[in-house]
Amino acid sequence: MKDESKILDWRSTGRRKGRRTLYNARTSYHCVGYRLEDGTRIKCRKTSKEPPKDAPHFFEDIWPAENRVLDSQLQADHQDKNYRNNDLENLEWKCVSCHRIDDSKTEKGVAQVSISYWPEQEDYSIPIQEGFWP
Image 1: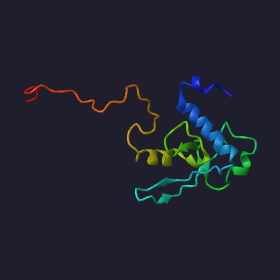
Image 2 (image 1 turned 90 degrees about the vertical axis):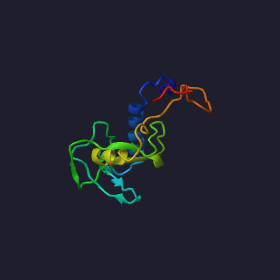
Image 3 (image 1 turned 180 degrees about the horizontal axis):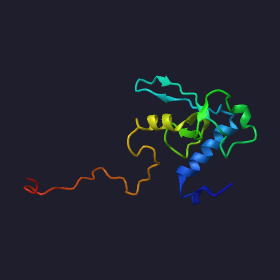
Image 4 (image 1 turned 120 degrees about the horizontal axis):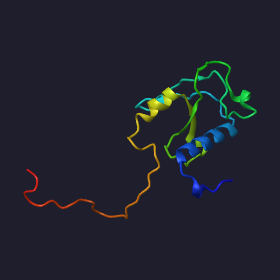
């Protein structure tokens, strides 16, 4: 196993690990869809026309025969947007469209693991001199 302290691009590594987790759990290779604002899930169930390049030897067992309409492979979606969290409960297969719809509902920047470079402080405000602003 690689030394995880030397990983520079967690987004790419997290996606690969997420795909591997879904494959190993033999999760059916179809898009689960997206959620509306009220939490209702809109099911998509589409899958790719061709098996992905990283498909395991048992891929035929998890690849539904119906709805093979996508030219692109499915993506492993990290529900909590933390690419390091590759628990099966946190992962779902999504097509590009459904993934984009779901991600558009999160705050900008949420899809990245944040690292704090500043020490904890109560107040980051800068005092403004009286009469400085019009």
